[in-house]
Amino acid sequence: MNAVAHPFHPSAIAGALSIQGLSKQYPLKGKPVSVLENIDLDIRPGEFVSILGASGCGKSTLLRLVVGLDQDYQGQILLDGRPVRGPGLERGIVFQDHRLFPWMTLQQNIALALKNHAMAATLKDRLVAEHIELVGLSGFESAYPHQLSGGMAQRAAIARALVNKPKVLLLDEPLGALDALTRVRLQQELQRIWLQEGCTVIMVTHDIEEALYLGDRVIVMDAHPGSIREDLRVDLPHPRERDSALLHGYKQRLLAELIGR
Ligand SMILES: Nc1ncnc2c1ncn2[C@@H]1O[C@H](COP(=O)(O)OP(=O)(O)O)[C@@H](O)[C@H]1O
Ligand SMILES: [Mg+2]
Image (cartoon, protein in one colour):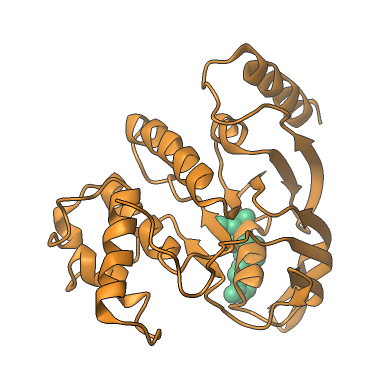
């Protein structure tokens, strides 16, 4: 199927994200506790950035702020030079759990993401079909979420996040609940989809190999308060081979860095 010229972003220009001096507190027993402290992060359009870090170091909080779900913070979050103020169609997110509506089919779940757009129903149908194909789920349009495997449901969640052609795709441990084999397959798929769509991606993961296989950069975060410890550039072209010796070298470096401290 040929890609449909998209009505919102005809040229599908990926977003540049600039996070400057970002700090965030949550109240704990009435007192503010620092969760993120002075995060500076510049991400180029179309870059794939992996974020690694222990549980509780603020990775999900960081993504929530970038999505615009929480505006109570200090510092700046700029998308293509403009401050992020609340959720917007140019930013899509996928969580560890698919969050599809159980009473809707795959097709209806994805179409729902387009509901606020005044565009012809036939165009919506084409965009939905195109994105179902993009994630390899053609033939399952009428399936309900309970009829999909975990991996298929995550593919559906990715299609739903991408159907609006976001400039930035945020992935919060999207493959974290999947078995090892499905996970490896979906990593490969994510690489293909990202290369095809050209969007900027920030992916949180616990898996060092996953972070290195996909990321142009791997950001390692420290906890209490959440801050950036390491910003490693993975200088290898895409698509990558999982068993490349160069990738293995990066893994050794990263492990030494993580365990060495
Ligand atoms: N809504 C909230 N209210 C209070 N504390 C929160 C809230 N959400 C997260 N936290 C706390 O903020 C810290 C970071 O959480 P989170 O961003 O979910 O970490 P991560 O995704 O890295 O595991 C944790 O200590 C967590 O308990
Ligand atoms: Mg989290």
